[in-house]
Image (cartoon, rainbow, N blue to C red; front, side, top):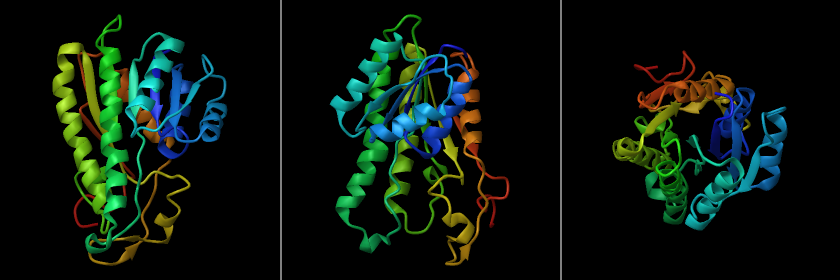
Length: 250
């Protein structure tokens, strides 16, 4: 995959950073997008001796002009876009439905759903007109795209929406040789996952510690999805700790 060009949103930390490090090690040329320039530069430094120094573009995925600038910058630097990892997202915290601030609900949906749409749209505009034509888009859906945790109504609703966007984009991308799929990620280790060891709220009200997996495994999964030719597509892929209490009753 040496030389392929990937845009990664939410690349300043967590899953986005882990995927950036994995793809850089496999020879990708990277455009890193996120809210904070310093965090993007940290990711670029952690990527090590990449084929080419990553392009760091501070980006607000909820703003169409900011997203356009990201893609324009990537094309100006690298000439094309082969892969979009549509990853930027906002958790929004835990709130019971009757207590959640509508403004926060809108903020989570705007980031997790509208942001994914705007990046999808920009990717389509680039990929359908480049030569060779086409590309691949991998949306970060989360297991919450089909199975919620308690008190996460905004996050859950936004991720269900991502599944709808993935389906619509997968259908519409066919005529342009754009393959669109979704990766649904379970408990991946990051600075935000320390609470899993202390206990996570379950549907029955208990707090139960849950296992986590190394975030680098998500990078391996995204790289695998992108390793297929464009006439084949992994439409949905779930990667999670083997012992995570998701399948069955725990």
